[in-house]
Length: 317
Ligand code: SER
Image 1 (cartoon, rainbow, N blue to C red):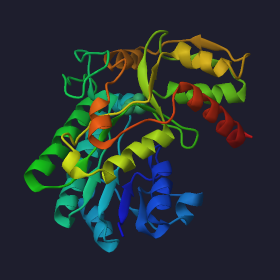
Image 2: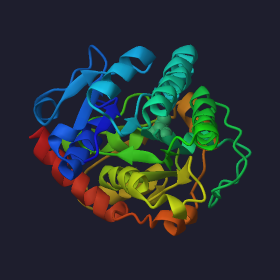
Image 3: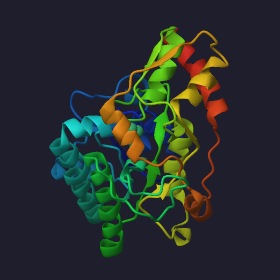
Image 4: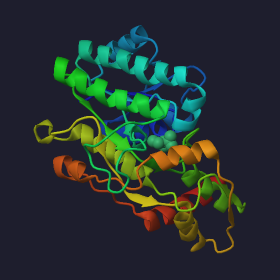
């Protein structure tokens, strides 16, 4: 039976991925890694073991990996794009120095490693329409620089040491469980909270600005399916373009209005978020993921909107 460590288990992706992995592999086999101050609570704390696993300490990671005989690490420690611009040194320390520690521990203990990349790994000179799998990646944000480095360093550990590294380039992930913090695509989550609370939404992204998005259940499936994929079929490793939908703010607003006709939105464009959004693809070509490991999204914008509104209404009472 496989033993898994999730680093960043209380974050936006980690909190749901840990639960999903426990459903698949059994609660006792999935360790919820966290940093002090972000302890697992509720279902996450009750559903299986947890351990302090700070990426900035290689020794601490090695201890946890040995203690629980870990075979696979989902390394979700990172700062999102906007907050990373405010703390570039910290973004690098967590994203890259931290990744180095994870990869070293994986090499010594023969673990597979999943470290997400992002649409943020692309830049202004990337082709924006149907962005190919293999293309120009010259991001101008520290988030992007660290994600390109993540891809390259993960590939390097595979090629040089045979560490089984795999990743996807996640689009904006939309979920009703744990809110994201400090990303450019956060608006596509925040808009649902405003709609359900009956508040007017102030949109920080300009009309017409398209970005790729995905509903969290598809995102979790992408990570797990890639890690389970037959390695003989993988031509790429770090990281695969994956997408489920691409929309500008007015499109998601219109979708929500189908269910909430009184919902109002106003634009107050945030210059930093807007510049980042404009530098990212308008739509990704994810055919490599489809061909090499059978990737398919289940949720389009309509099904996602309906489910988000329903679940968030339950959650917010
Ligand atoms: N959701 C991320 C962000 O907006 C992109 O991967 O920073």
